[in-house]
Length: 252
Ligand SMILES: [Zn+2]
Image 1 (cartoon, rainbow, N blue to C red):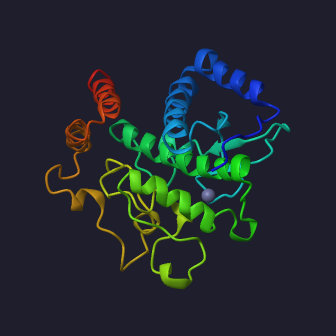
Image 2: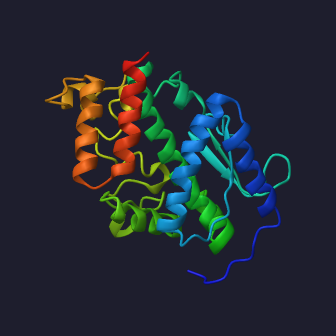
């Protein structure tokens, strides 16, 4: 990891963009982007040595119709690092998420994981220069950082997007970390591909509510279990955020 990194030419503008979002954006954007930038800050400190400059984070559809998010070295207005996250994942209209307020916190976790994935693309674009174009960005260098962060998060390892060599049986880093999170991490809000397709059969994971022996699919019970697990793990900030989400549901 390099010890000095050239500051991007638009660093001041990116800081001003973030300040606008946190202080003056419309309420919905301010709430969600504010939480996302807070998470991004913690990852920058914990996993990237504080080397990254805040990206432009936009709640807007990415270029590929199937992607949950993307990261562009050049933004749509000619600035640098632009991260787009599909807003239907948050609002609940995306076919791979569950609708409704009880699943809002789980949907936020999905979106935060999309941002974590894109922050690794940012790291390679802006710090290492290892863009791995022949792998569409998901090569060995990308998988290596996924696995470094994954170790800290107790997630199983992934491979590059090309299925070859001794790691060929591992999951691909192209969907990391959504494809390696424990099934209850998203609080029953996530419906991976084979669960979302009514005609898909065979090797699908059990649906969240079927696999949850205590909550029986009750999202409130799942949220409360998550608070206890987070407190046991010393994840006080995350537990507080979940309690706030529960409170918001109860007072509606
Ligand atoms: Zn990617």
